[in-house]
Length: 153
Figure 1: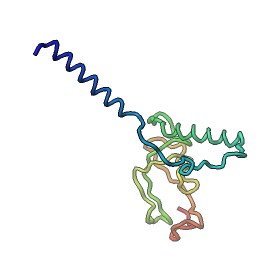
Figure 2 (figure 1 turned 30 degrees about the horizontal axis):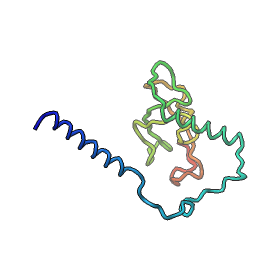
Figure 3 (figure 1 turned 60 degrees about the vertical axis):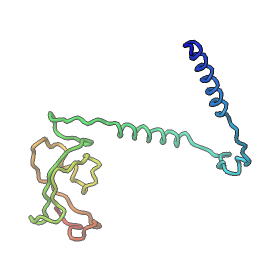
Figure 4 (figure 1 turned 60 degrees about the horizontal axis):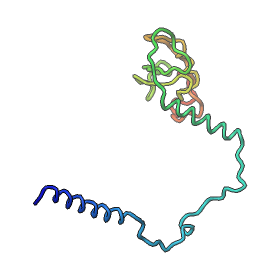
């Protein structure tokens, strides 16, 4: 066969195949249902939204984005301050004796929001790397561990 004839036949066949494929891409199905039978809109008429609620929502989103994308930087040239994240070791005692759950190593906490006993974070503020310090705290009367509740540590 002649080379020109082969190319012409190939081009024609390709055109017919493409036309067939493209014609089958259209919507050839009939849908026999009403969309509102399956989709229900909520009640949105008469709703009110205060500027304060919007502002609080926006601020909450901003705070979340900042927190999620925060970068940490080791600071070694000053004492720790409220809001700093620190890594500490501690050994708690009551009446000079160690107690269960009172000792830990390499604990990371953010000063001012650590969730430790009141006064514990305040006792760390102002310390520098390598410092040792005795911090006196009192467990709350309603503390979950009855063995230490209400006691000075």
